Image (cartoon, rainbow, N blue to C red; front, side, top):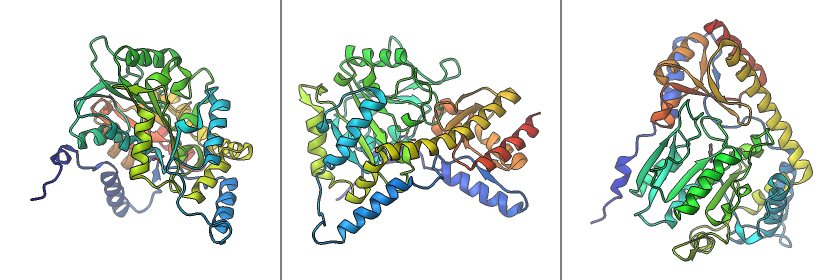
Length: 393
Ligand code: PLP
């Protein structure tokens, strides 16, 4: 008789964004007059950089011509895109990576979820709280033993390993979703040293690195000495280049990284060649264009637009005296709401017609906090902040 993976029963029902959508729908049906401004979901709103659109159009033409048509590509990605990423890495963070350490994917989420397959079930998994829920859920699905490390106001939502922490596989996210906090060099070094001393591995999610504007902050875990011996880095074009619906990411798996005498790079290649048939050629051409000089400039303009929104939000919160993290090096602003985060959601929806995300949706330490995103239009962001200002003054 077939039976199912019962670990799935331990997952929380994914009520967060469907609950939010249901509440908005009900509220807007009952109160059709005021415009509701949505600053909840972490999806981009600006269209793709033109340079990527053009490259994908050209690639589509190639696929329709028998002289230039391509079938299956390398599972690991095309060399033209690996080259572009290698150059970007070096110019962005002064990190040198080899081409065979770069694995192109359809986004960071699937790689982060799939990477957990490489570790045996007796590993202790360390996950910060609050954080992007994929780390927790993908490990619950496998029935893993999970330790949460608490983010809070005292540590600015940047937890560090305590002396008694036991952990084998450690997830870190910087800039963090949902808190927008970014680890410093010194703080990341503490984690890297912990991993080296304990034969642990760090799975580092840098999906928001392009939002870092403070040059004193690290953009890649590989900027920390010896990190190649104990870290993997997941990168995404979703927020950097508006690829949330286009889908492309890349994962850096250093060849120096070994566990139990085995190369993690070889294991990941083996996994990908077996279970993944490569990212679409057309999309990889679009991604290559993103890393051109023109592409980087077009992405920068879009990110600057979101940054300006983040600034409007942070200035407003400063003015009305609400404590927050994020906003400067991240599209997320994580504010202290000082009450149950769902109560605050209802309060903000009813009194200001503004939607955000209750912090409790990102972990127990998110209770009492609330996430706003900078992804709406500038005009709407300004209107929303005027309403919030009125409400709190
Ligand atoms: N990592 C973090 C921290 C995210 O917030 C997200 C998406 O919101 C992802 C990864 C997913 O990236 P992708 O769209 O490349 O799958």
